[in-house]
Length: 272
Image (cartoon, rainbow, N blue to C red):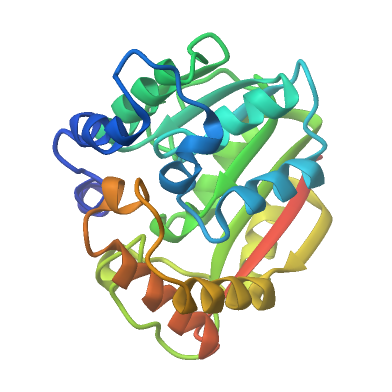
């Protein structure tokens, strides 16, 4: 397990990420100018379909003002900032990558949301919070990096009192081995995919009841087709976070979806 975690940390371990983001964000003006979540959407939504997917998942989960939301695998904090702004909820993010957490804090200060969102370093398999502390747990494009799915979903269940909700948007396996590199793994060594059926079974086995489940594969394929047909995305974009070859990694994900090697699902569950 230690080797697995080290591999994931290495994949998301960009050196001086906050410094790189400062440089990338200079296009919006001086350092003391407050930014909007919309200005950051091109670089802080690290999952298929970006901000639209986060918004849809929040609606499915019924997130509302005053709720306490945990974003597991929060990256550089884009979903947390969006949810706090849109719904008036309090969002806590946890991520394995120290550079990502530092960047999330920096970006949240730049948007003036330091009081609405908070971030800390931690493993999804050992979340540093008390039992039943949150109203909703959010998980987006994270589970593919975790081999112990049963442990992951049990730990998420621990975060929720009975009747509270867990919402997930993740990549699942299809037919055949995927082509690498991919946005979450450059080789199969740190990629742990399950089928849609196995994912649902693992979540329900951890103490959840399915409220809604849908395949987003076709809409994701259409999104990637549009992404591939358009000119390069305007800066700043995810290349500022993941490096200059991120476009190739994303294109490979689109290729795998198109060939049926991968799929995308979104779902909401209730703790029982």
